[in-house]
Length: 190
Ligand SMILES: Cc1cc2nc3c(=O)[nH]c(=O)nc-3n(C[C@H](O)[C@H](O)[C@H](O)COP(=O)(O)O)c2cc1C
Image (cartoon, rainbow, N blue to C red; front, side, top):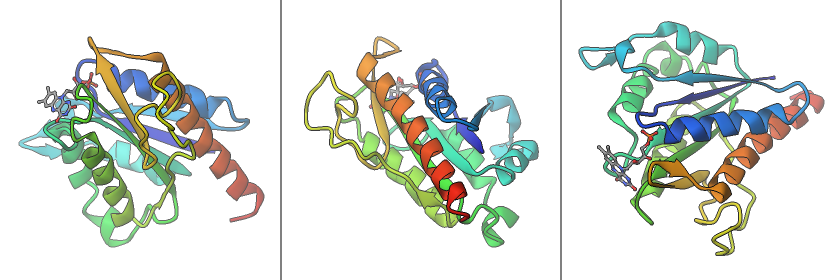
């Protein structure tokens, strides 16, 4: 079960979430997470040029998208990656039926981070992917997983450029949940 975690990070907080999501995937038997960091060097004249990354995703069972929230949406680098999927990948719906999920981080208590997560959901929908949110109620306990109460995916809040324990627990859980769902679908022959 190949699960790609494709993300962009500048100061490292999204990267920390990505690594923890991968650890959550690894906790499920036969899950093989692969981390792919979107690198600015792959963006030339505004266009993301690394076709090898898209090919890795072609051969995956699930994709977990991660971006910091920048001005209420994904970072420009993540968007350049997303725009690079608008050719054959979109036209021929090459990623249709893959499981998808997403995560973001901001410094605001709200920070319009849900809008970033919604963008990731729309990206997955444009590719005909099947979105997996969180089955964690997030009942307002600030020390519990999903403390910010987002069920569309993981929203974390960075404090002094670090991710706090409840958000890391949520990241682990998200990775585990995606891997479990892929595993269950495989067992049922879908
Ligand atoms: C250009 C820019 C725009 C940002 N916009 C937002 C925002 O709209 N909402 C928010 O909560 N945080 C915002 N932030 C804070 C980042 O999301 C936060 O620092 C995040 O942890 C950065 O992720 P990284 O460590 O993976 O690079 C912004 C930061 C930058 C540099």
